[in-house]
Image (cartoon, rainbow, N blue to C red; front, top):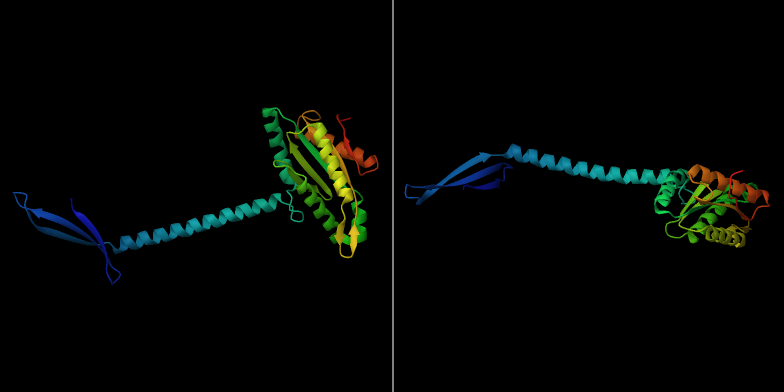
Length: 239
């Protein structure tokens, strides 16, 4: 078989060298035939193609990074760092479908900061932001692996808890209420104190769809507010 060698000359010219052995009728080697072919254009085309592919791969990596960043911005609340309502509303149906297949309950705690307008009126929106961030830190501290904490909108937050009993989720909600009641939120020379009202619902006991469950939880929160705030309520059926 002929051998092949690619030579890069100082002139920038690429030459392909084929070495073919020559033999006589007795199959004895008598010499070699050298065949030279100018392949500069082919090499340049291959080099340009590799460079284009490398640039393309770099652009694809940048696009993936940007897509990840845009996705995070779309589902993440900038102030608190928690996921937002959009993410929660996308996630809840999937979690309920998974729970239905595996036959385990899913709890939702919907909570609202009491008298939040008074906080904003007294301390300004920066003071209100400090309180919102304090709630987000509290939710992270009280979340298990697999729990999903989100800012639901304004001063409302929601916590999704897979595989938990009604008794346990009510205890968790009460722990959140007590912890936030005892919390002191520093703001400049002032200290802000307020409380939480919380509504609790359980899938599938109180609602077998994401819509029906959230209706019950929202009603439970309304009952907690109407009962004087700073309490936990669970309404088992939609009236």
